[in-house]
Image (tube, rainbow, N blue to C red; front, side, top):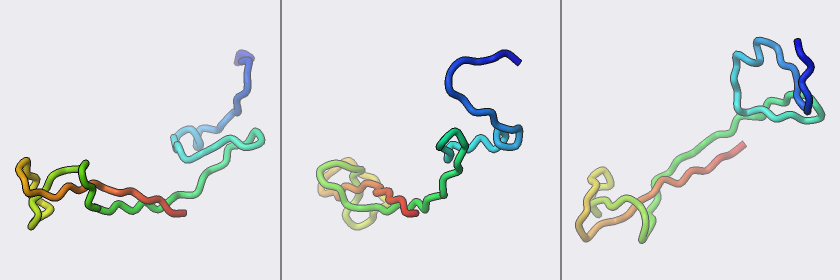
Length: 77
């Protein structure tokens, strides 16, 4: 193999096949990050958001009256 300039780390085939984006290089070693729990919740968001019927959030409308909603995403360790 040729010698490549710059900072890099060698990884084995198994690590490459994982193709995880939940890793960081710390002190020249590959560290896997803990998975986070993602919670999505629909919340009212005036004046932005998707306009829905005031009686049914499943009905997207373009007329008034309407209630506008957005998805709020929270991550926990």
